[in-house]
Every structure is written in structure tokens, then in C-alpha cells.
Image (cartoon, rainbow, N blue to C red; front, side, top):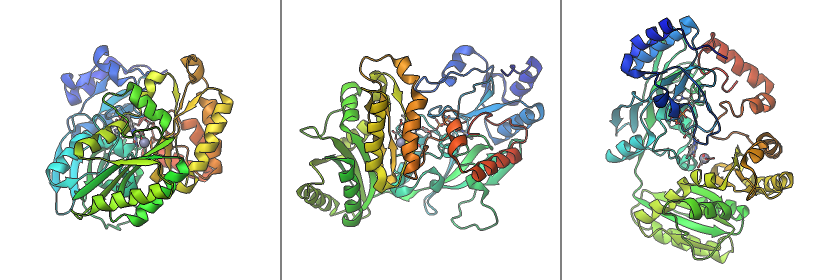
Amino acid sequence: MRLAPAPELMARFKAIVGDKYAITDPDVLAPHLIEGRGLYHGHTAMMLKPANTAEVAAILKLANETRTAIVPQGGNTGLVGGQIPFDGEIILSLSRLDKIREIDSESNTMTLEAGVVLQKAQEAAHAAGRLFPLSLGSEGSCTIGGNLSSNAGGTGALAYGIARELMVGVEVVLADGRVMNLLRKLKKDNTGYDLRHIFVGAEGTLGIITTAVVKLFPQPRAIETAFIGLPSPDAAVKLLNLAQSRIGGTVTGFELMIRGILEFALKHGHNVRDPLAGPHPWYVLMEVSSQQAEGLRDNVEEFLAEAIEQGIVGDATLAANMDQAKAFWHMRHTLTEVQKPEGGSIKHDISVPVAAVPQFIAEASEAVVKLIPGSRPVPFGHVGDGNMHFNVSQPVGADKAEFLARWKDVNAVVDKIVLKLNGSFSAEHGIGKLKRDTLAKVKDPVALALMRDLKKSFDPNGILNPGKVL
Ligand code: FAD
Ligand code: MLT
Ligand code: ZN
């Protein structure tokens, strides 16, 4: 148990940001100490809200000199507990670093501070006639710094890449307070080791991201969004391959969901309707984009008719307009929330080669139901990336706490299948606290040793997000 910093030390931290931005009021701190699923509760004596990189640097310099542990926090939407202070660490909130500094439409880049909320970044790009394609269910509150630090994936990764691929340049404050400025807009820069990427996915354990340059894309001139009913995950994989080879546009979204999770959304979601007339065992939400203004709709309609004829698709509907397309995406983005009213939910965020997704879903579902009879697997997710959220809801009427107590047993049977299929037990949410023990068990031992060496070299006093990842 870490002791709260002594009053004199608290006063030195306060002096860096000013009294107003050194939060000690328990009521204001409270929402920063729990994560969205209520899985974790942390504690702290103080949260600091610096205004700029210089203040972040001063905080880290003092923290390093006094061996005071820090937990960086963006929008607090992380799903592995990485942003929670479990042992009285000071929270370093990036929320005041919220400026979009520049949109360079010709270089297709946007320079923005770490605390910019993802949705604000998307809207700014849109207003400049560009697309920033990172898209997550949490986009109304998560931040660019959190997205990069957790190397977020989301629904646009299939066509545009994960957060790592969207980052061009970065500014990072190191544990000792030095500022590393790699804020360039360059695609090509072969000047030695590429240090930018060490901080992406590091979950705040190696440095604090304060500013980034991210990639923008031209806005598509035509977008078609289809909601498709299918017999099986296997049909979904076939459909994806067919769509990628046959449609004269790019498949920019391809999300699979089982009927069970659509039912949760229909029951508990706000303004959610089933877009298809009858039930289907599985669904795909598919988005196709093109730079040609004409012809895409006919092309997608023909493609779907052919897929129905071949028996790959049971039924499908194309969004009639942007509002309907938004309604389809709204339903997709509620899938995290609508599991909550169904009681305990044990989560997995796995990836396997795309072709192995059907085998994974079949074997994991069987194994989990055998382990806990009556439990309800509700797999959904980014099937085009081989990344499924294999979430398991508790049996109807079961005791929530008793069910959640089986979290590790359920993970163990699922992870075993993932490893057999050469997959990853953490495809997009990261390690944080939740998956630290699993990482230590399954990561290649040489890689793990190098990770520990990196941590020691970047943060020798262990002040940055201690106890997370490693
Ligand atoms: P936080 O939760 O505040 O922090 C996340 C981690 O990054 C923590 O370890 C924290 O210490 C660290 N951190 C935060 N800011 C910085 C910084 N500036 N410098 C260094 N470290 C920092 N994730 C996906 O990948 N794909 C999805 O599709 C997806 N969907 C989601 C849907 C919902 C409804 C929710 C609640 C979460 C979802 N997530 C998804 C989880 C995802 O990790 C986050 O939503 C997002 O990337 C985290 O951003 P944040 O600003 O909230 O970070
Ligand atoms: C999503 O893709 O909606 C999230 O990453 C899934 C989750 O909440 O598990
Ligand atoms: Zn996801």
C-alpha cells in the first residue's frame, strides 16, 4: 500500500498546475477511480490537470526525483484497468491538452494534443473535407492520447489501419521530464531506430504522449452500408473475401455479430430496431466506400443478390440514406453497453487468422458452455481483422458475483483455443492490469525480457503506471 504523498510534496505538485487544477475533492475524483464496467475501483489523493507539455514535463521531473508514481488518464474508457490508480498513484489527466493545432489538407495530416476527444478530431477532419477513420464505440469520450497509448483498433481498422498505423509523428514526455519531439509529418524518415512506436500500445508505462500527428484520408464520395443476415461465421468470412474481390470500392467496415447480442441491443438499446424482417443466426454490418460518386449502390446490390443466390447470405438490406446508415452503426456501437443489463459478462478480446474465426467461435462456445452450463456466449466484432470480442453473459438468473468469480477459468479455456490457433489473447484493448498475468505466462520469454529491459531503461525508478502491462 503506497502512502499518499506528504503535504509538502503535494504542495510542490500543486504549484506546477495551480490550485484549481490539482484536484483533491473526493467527489470530483470519484469518477476517475472507477472504470466503465465497474470491475475496478482505485484510490488517490490527487489528480493533476496540466495545461501543456511544459507542465507535464515539470510534473514528471518532480515525480521522478521524489519517486512519486503517476497514472496517466485520458477519457477513462480503457477496458483493462490501465488508467486506474490502484495503489494511490497521482492521476495525470491530459484533458486540458485539448487543442487541434493544425489540419494540413495537402499533406493529409492533423496535429493535435493528447486530450482531444476522438469525436472532436473526427469532426474537425470532416469540416476540413478529410476523414480521420479511427472509430470506436467510446469515441464520444476517449482521447487521442488514450487511443495511441492503447493502440486502439475499432471498426475502421480493416481498411485504414489501427492507431499505430494512423500515427505519423509524436511528442512524448519521458519519465525524467525530458521532452522528445518527433512531431514530423513524414512518411519516410530512416534516421535510425523508430522510437515513435515504442510509446504506441505502451499504456503509459514508458512515457506520456502529449501531442501527435495523425494521418487523414480523402472523404469517400460514395458510401453504402448494408445489414446482412447469414447462417454462420463461415459464411461471413466467405462474404468478406467475395466483397473484397468483387465490389468496385473498398470494404471499410465488416462487423460480425451473433443474433444473441442483437437481441440484447433490441431489448436494452436506445432506439434500436432490427433492420431485417426475420431472425438470422448471425449478422454482418458491412460498409463499402468509393472515390467514384456513381455506381457503387448498383454494384453492392448486385453483389448481395449474388451472395443470396449462392446461399452465403440469408437476407440483406442497404441503408436508404445516411440516417439509416447511422442507425446501423449506432446499434453496433451500443453492443458494449447492452451487455450490462444481462448481468455479469466475462470478456475476451482475441484475434486469430481470419480463416480460423469460425473454428475459434465454434470451439470456444462449446468449451465455455461445457464449463458453465447455461452461460451465453455473445461473440461480435471486427471479423475482417480476425478480432472477435468473445464475451460471455451469465446464465439467466445466476448470481452475478459467483459468475464473475469464474473469470479466470473462462479465460483459460478460451485462451487455450486462441493459442492453439496461433492467435493473440489481447487484440485491441491491451494488457493493463487485467491481462498482466496472462502476458507473463504466454509471451515469448525473450520478448518479455526485452520488454522488461525497455521499461528499466525508459523508467528506471518505476514511476510511470507501475503494475500495468508488466
Ligand atoms: P484511458 O482509458 O484514459 O487510458 C487508456 C490507457 O492509456 C491507460 O493505460 C492510460 O494510463 C494510458 N494513457 C491515456 N492517455 C495517455 C497519454 N496521453 N500518454 C500515455 N498514456 C496514456 N478499444 C479498441 O481498441 N477498439 C474498440 O472498438 C473499442 N471500443 C470500445 C467501446 C466502448 C464502449 C468502450 C468503453 C471502450 C472501447 N475500447 C475500444 C477501449 C479503448 O481502449 C478505449 O476506448 C480508448 O482507446 C482509450 O482511450 P481513453 O482516452 O479513454 O484512455
Ligand atoms: C467494441 O469493438 O465494441 C469493443 O472493443 C468491444 C468491447 O466492449 O468488448
Ligand atoms: Zn473492438
